[in-house]
Length: 218
Image 1 (cartoon, one colour):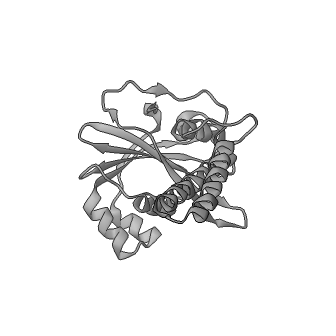
Image 2 (cartoon, helix red, strand yellow; image 1 turned 60 degrees about the vertical axis):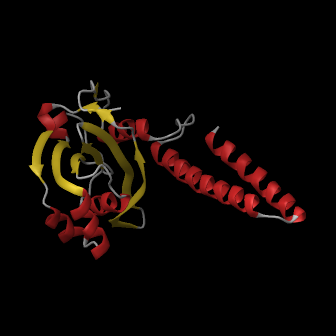
Image 3 (tube, one colour; image 1 turned 180 degrees about the vertical axis):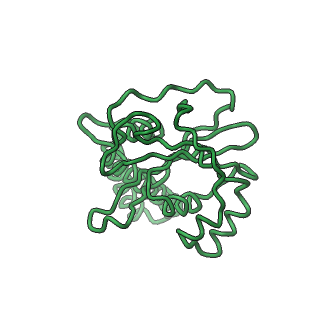
């Protein structure tokens, strides 16, 4: 889903890569990805009380929207994480390539034990949309924290459970990814194993892993 951000929130400033380097201090490999994969970064929208008439909260004082023009349609998550670490507000990225748009975001919050540090979740990606796609209006909410969750939820692969807040939902999605990788490992090992008794043990492990995954998704 693509959202129709209001004109009142338009910011429209090019963000130099050097500014990100200055604040996030990436290593050489990540800098090379910036150069190889990114054409330009534009700070497109600033969703704040004065621009969208929605109250801020201590955890979400503003929400930013960055448009990232790509050179070849690919962008490593380590690059997005570097940008997120440089900007102390939640960010929604819109990747641009060949006339198409892809929304991407992570859930970002302050570290509960050190408010000066940020915790950034895994990244969640939408599909590629045509640049002519009709966008959805922003959800009608009363504060930016609720808006943040409502904007993020369409990117999450499975819906929220009853009473589950966005942080808990994101943490469950991250656990789903871990268990999916474990399931893939089990299947690979089972395919390679020749000994019958070890196959039985791997089958049991595979069955338990599938049950765990179904419990997380269901």
